[in-house]
Amino acid sequence: MIVLGIETSCDDTSVALVTDKGDILANEISSQIDVHSSFGGVVPELAARAHLENIDVTYRLAMQKSGVSIDDIFAIAATCGPGLIGGVIVGATFGKTISAFSGKPFYAVNHLEGHALSARLGNEKIEFPYLLLLVSGGHCLICIVKGPRSFEVLGQTLDDSVGEAFDKVAKMLGLGYPGGPAIQEYAQDGDPFRFDLPKPLYKKQGCNMSFSGLKTAVRLIVEKHENFNINDLCASFQRVVSELLFQKCEFALECCNNNGINISSIVVGGGVAANTEIRAGLSILAKKYRKEFFAPSLKLCTDNAAMIAWSAIERIKNGDTGNPISFRPKPRWMLGE
Ligand code: KG4
Ligand code: ZN
Image (cartoon, rainbow, N blue to C red; front, top):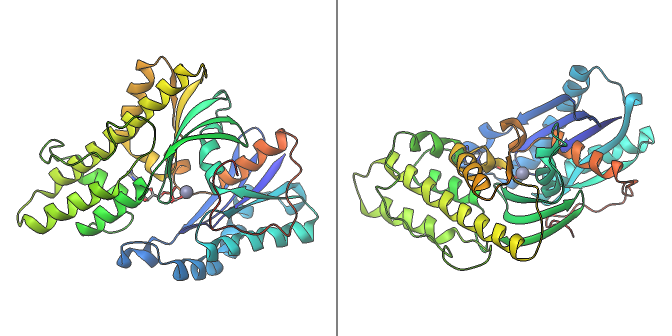
């Protein structure tokens, strides 16, 4: 069984073909970094226009690379939210159109479900339920994934997402967009304990998080100090973000233990899951709690259509027959809603 996936919720136009065995036949990604980098963040109107320009060629490339034809495809899956609505509409409409003319079922996929299940793409031995840390440019939450469409959110950010914090700090430091990879690179040569940055909600029980105070603290350092070492600041920021995430995951693990929820493993997903310090720390935490740790490959961490196709495949395997073509794209759409 082959599913066609389409992803256009932020700044990557992506089309993929994935089999029910988890083989990725194609996963074409047309990045818009050049469009948005001079603005230091994604400009929604420009993103929507770029998706419209790129979707057709990205689709053709994916079909060509995979060598499959429309007849070989079992279903079409497109991100229908949450995200920047102009882009979401482009991808959803493209998918619905293919579904309408081919007569294949349409799956309206929640982008967060895509990230939440991405580690299982090619690694179905990751058993439900598992603890998920979802850290992307638009979202930051901790939840128990009980099944392909069954999630229990334990906590989330009360303000900025982690990716947003990385991007905004990078913008302050003039490191360009996206900020995460740049900060990680600068942090490599820095002293992570040079700056004593605040850790909002660190000691507070529960899994809610906050990053805006941390971001403001970095801004104050940038404004106050003329000659600060940029590597040290990146390393200190990355350390504090990581410690905040680890602490909240530890609370989540304790919450599972106290409530008799036997999770199989700790899984991370979303663009920030590409961060090596965060991956390494989660792996250590998993060992401490005698759990396994899984992270998607780097290409499956950031936005891509393979995870969208896979999310539909998980639903199909669960007996889900899809959504009507009238499904309304949603700018906001929480996991499990
Ligand atoms: O999941 P994603 O591609 O898009 C959304 O769904 O939002 O995540 C993009 C975010 C950006 O904020 C980017 O700076 C961040 O992921 N990111 C990273 C790294 N690679 C990407 N953050 C920290 N370290 C990285 N290596
Ligand atoms: Zn994403």
